[in-house]
Length: 323
Image (cartoon, rainbow, N blue to C red; front, side):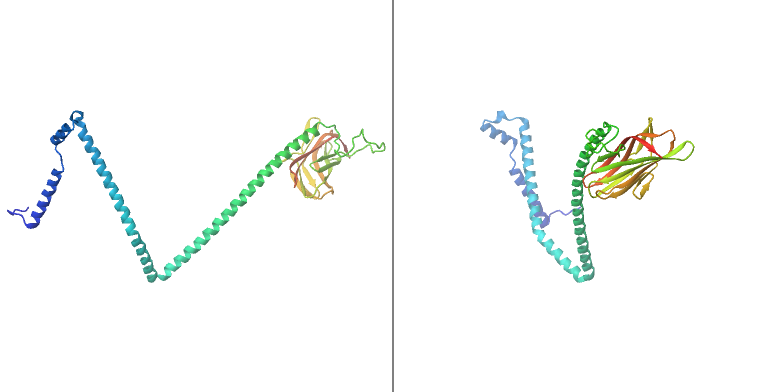
């Protein structure tokens, strides 16, 4: 604590400055009595309420604060504008210093960054290419889906027509028995079915005894394609289709299918040449000897071609077994 009886020069100047500021603040303040007298002269004193003065003070304080914030913002922008060139210049000088001090490390880092950038650009281009390919595949899939739906509708119509046809199914291109002009035609006509440019011609269903009560049955059919670039599948029983014999209310599933030189217990396939027949064999094992004829033979197949992709079912009725 200062116990001196007087003030030095600096202390005196500081005291004068404080009292001068206080005087200026008091001079700028209008007393309440002066305010009331002024309002009375203006004939406004009767309109004033006690809260008006407080409300005016709040509005003035808000205005002062708003001006202060605006001044701070302007000052900040000026500071950023002024210091930005110095910061850029400083960064440039720092880079020169680092290059001069550590030339090898920075050069390696720049090379690595350039290599990574090139690699990223390459990956982006590959992704864009893959995206374009996927979009094209999606369009093709949509077209294929529409084609399959149309072909499926057509196949269902053909199957309905085949189910309502007479027992002996004749190719649409073959003449009907009533319209056949030749009385010398053979009494044993080969059954044939034409579906989606494929002709199925049933040759025979042959039985062979395997025991005192059982027999095997093999049905032979010639398959001919009217068009090029076709591939055919034959099935015993799969998710795509099921071949079978229906006789006396019982369903019999084949145990093996053969198409040309290919065979399997579930499915087999082969490529077809236009107008060249290939033999398909559907084999049934351990059939009771009481079965002497076949009411219905259904051959489940699948066609892959440029004009059709979908399941096909050829059906033959009232087939006599030969030994």
